[in-house]
Structures are given as C-alpha cells and as structure tokens.
Image (cartoon, rainbow, N blue to C red; front, side):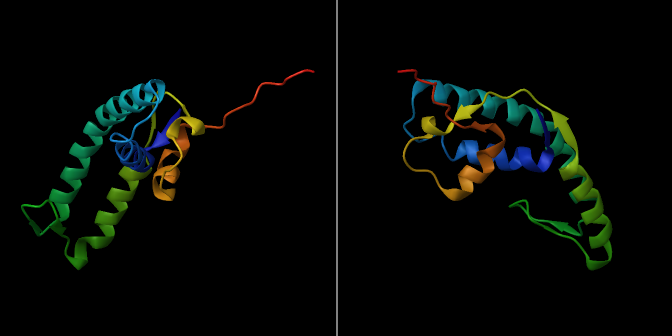
Length: 126
C-alpha cells in the first residue's frame, strides 16, 4: 500500500494507542508487526525531519521543541510539508474492525483507517 509519511506518523500513533488493550491474539500480533514495520520506515523520515528543523531553527530545546524564526517559517513549512507528503510503498497487515474490541477512541479509529477492513459476513444459503 502507498501512504504518505504524514499518514504513517498518524498510523503509528493509532497502533501505539492499542498496545495496552486486551485484544485477540491475531489482532495483537498484527498490531505489533505493523508497529515494527512502520517504525522502521519512519527512521529515515525522523532523520530528515531533524535535519529540516536544525536547518531553520534558531533554538532547539532539550525537550525537542524548536523556535523557527518568522523569516524562516515559510521555507521551513515548504520543506517540512514536502517531507510529510512524500509517499512510500509499505506492506502492512490489515486488521478487522471486530478485532479491536468494544471501545476505541474516534482519534485512534481515524488514525488506523489505512489498515482497517470491514468484517464481511459470509453468504448463508438456507
């Protein structure tokens, strides 16, 4: 599947929101497998994101937050957005809605949309 870097960051947040939740083994396995794959893919993006921040920031604090001067803001946003919109091809395991349990936040649901599939009931002939 092809996803933007921005979607991958959102997806890993959604996946991480489920790691403490009691789920069926198949769903838990798929979640952990997907976290590993997405995290590995984002390592390169993290390095590039850090370079962009260092290029334009006047100050980077210990907590990782940065001050981007107003005169650098437009060029910073342009480069940052270009990185976030970059598409990558990635093989992920889909997860059925029913495997996520009875409760999930709307935010997590939205973040997981690229890998969620509808449960399809088999046709039953009488």
